[in-house]
Structures are given as structure tokens and as C-alpha cells.
Image (cartoon, rainbow, N blue to C red; front, top):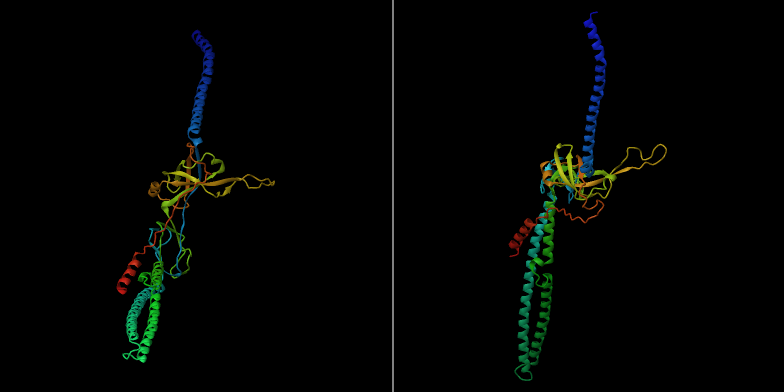
Length: 400
């Protein structure tokens, strides 16, 4: 081995521990930097979670056990009859006043015609009775004049009594004539009173009992005729159709239901432990499974249902040893929706919803508060104009 190679080998041996030492010191430093970086990442994540909890999550209560609910307007007939036409079916949308079911109106039409004729006869009879009363009054006036004439004649004859100008027999005949006229006047006055009693002593025609009864019969028959057409009381969607053509239906029998889609709400079932911070009026974000997260509804907490929802537990109510396990109760909280958002994206009763209540504002009333809520649902009032116009035509034609 040459001297040069020996020198190189010695130098290499001398440098090797330094290189090894440098490498050993470099590896822990790299790991240390990585551990520090990873620790900082975890601390940042933990801080982010802490901030989210402090500013967001602790002010939120959420549940996916929520469903759309709404009123179910039962459609029932007000008269019995046989179904002639069914104009709608399930899932079809209808407008208030739209005919849903038509009953056979043959009997109602005949009853209406009878009532129509009854009113005409009542008016004619009243006119005849009024004429009889007027005739009786004229007879009374004539008889009063006759009596007055006979009384004057008797007085003149009595002034001539005891003279040759009048005999006793003639005077007696004059007296008998007065007595007879007085009796006849009383009889005619009795007939007049009877005639006036029939028409109610000058009671106007429209206030006559027989005429008023006939008018009410005509209105009742007309109303029954209108009720053969069963109409939708509100706008909505048809559900639970339970009627077929030819079916004989009774008064009050459920035929179908109309669900007003513009008046639905969400019943969100929260655990009892979640209710502590929920207040009436708090804002709510809601998403529907049918639309997904692309559609968000905004509502408000309306209150707590008077009845609790279904209880649930991850374990049986009683375990194998016989010990009872506390059951967590779900309580339905009603949430009202924004009508504009509801109109833009309609919902159906029974759809699943995800609900998130913002509980930051604690100024509202507690859910257990009982308020007097003013709510008024009305059906469209019956329009009596057609039948009233018909009655006026009858009076104009037969009472003049």
C-alpha cells in the first residue's frame, strides 16, 4: 500500500465519526420539527373546535327527527244521497269552491219545485184572504149605514107616537127593524174580525206566517239542492279519497280530505335535555330530504305540543336483571315556516326534515308558556243572492 493511499484511509477513518455524529444529530432535529408542526396543527384544530363551540355550536340545537305536518280538512256530505260524479283523485290540487263530488239531485229538484209552488200558493191565498177581509169590512160599513138609517126612521116615528099619523103596529115594525139591523151588524163585524185574524190584523204580506213559512221552505229546498254539489272548502291537495260513483253516502261520512299546502308546519322531535335553551320565536334553519341541502327554509319556534312524542331508548325499558332504565322522551316542537319560501318550494305532509334551532337569543318565552292564540278558520259563507232574487221575482209576479 502506497503512502498516499494510507494517508487517505487515515483521513477517511478520522472523518467517519464526525459524519456519523452529524447524521445522528440531524435525524432527531427533523423529527422534532415534524412533531412540533403536527402539534401546532392539532392545537389549531382544537382551537377551531373550541371557537366553533363557544360562538356557534353551544347556541344550536338540532335534530333529524322532524316531519312536515298540517291540517287535514275532512270532506263530508251535509245531506245523504247517491254519488253521481267524483271529480278528483288523490294527489290532485284543488281550489276553494271547486266541486269535488256531485250527488244525485233528482229528489232535491222535486222538493225545490214543490217549495216554489208552495210560496206561490201562500201569496195567492193571502191575497184572497185580504180580499175577503176587505169585503167583510165593506159589509160592516154598509150595515152600519143601514142601522143608522133605521134608527133615524124609528126616532122619527117615535116622535109621532100617540097621534093619528102613525099606528102602534108601524112603530113596532120600526123597532124590530132596528133590532134586526143591530144583530146583523154584530154578525158581520164578527165575520170581519175572523177575516182580519186570518191575515194577522193588517200584517204586511211578507210578514204573514204562512208566507214566511213558504219562503223558509223554498230556501231550505234550494240549500239542499246546492249541497248535492260537495265543494272544496280550502285550497289544497286531495288525500285519502274514500268514495266511488254509485256509492250511497250518509250525512257526515268521510269521503276524502283536503290538505292546505300553504298552511303546513314542521314538528321537530327534540330530546327533553335539548329543550332548556329553546325559546318561542327563535330562528330555525330547516332542510328537507326531498330537496337536499340546496334548499334551506327559515322558520321560527312556535311552541311546544301539548302531547309528547314517542319515547325511545337505546336499551329496553327493563334490563335482564329487572332494573328499569330511564327512557329518553322525544317532545315535538312546532316550527312555523316562511310562506314565501314554502310557496317557492312546496312541502307535503310527512316529509322528513333536518332542523337546527339558533338558541343564542334567550329573550323569548319558555316553551312551557301557555298563550292565548287567536286563530280563526272559516268556510266560505253561503251566497243567498240567487234564491233571494228568485223570491223577489215571485213576489213581483204574484203579489202585485
